[in-house]
Image (cartoon, rainbow, N blue to C red; front, side, top):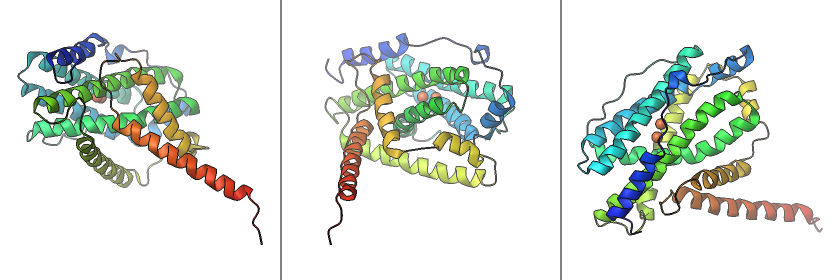
Length: 287
Ligand SMILES: [Fe+2]
Ligand SMILES: [Fe+2]
């Protein structure tokens, strides 16, 4: 299948629409939480940011959809916009059900330069999802949240995975049709957008820290998550979870490749580093 062809467009749009799942966030099997689980859920400092991000995502995708003339792309994009809006609804249901202390900040103005915003948002989702896959696995292992709750979020993770596969294919399709890139997105283009996404994430983390200073994501909560945390293992988890989740998609579709490749390089370097330091500590110092 030639990337940038109508066949390619039809394949990634068809796959996206065919894997859609219908559900109503308020009718999901939300579990009753005991005091300890409720306390843990309420102490998570980033729900407000997640809520805002999903609402902003819905608005960006919907506004970008309006500018797209191709009816096949337009339908698929409209569906993604509805899914993002449903993510925001899902978070809203959780906030209300469990009495989370989260306010609804008003959305920033997203009206200018909407294609650029959509691309920034798409690469941002690729970045968030790659590390989100590892975090999600960690959350499951640490039993920070009950299984029933994680199952609800599993549905959301699957949709985000569909979004990034759709986005990467849309991006390659668009770049190829505009005469840039061939068969895939140029690495420099990816690097450019990932650096922008990382910049935004750092800004977010700074703002989050300011907002959360003095709040009660107590040491016990963090340690439950991070006890025995090992960056090497975390990166391995991100990589293997990414591969596992991506294997559910049709082989002919493109997948995000930039971050997994970067992770492989980093893991090799870490392995080399570890084996060197082990060798040095094994060899007795000669005098
Ligand atoms: Fe979302
Ligand atoms: Fe998404």
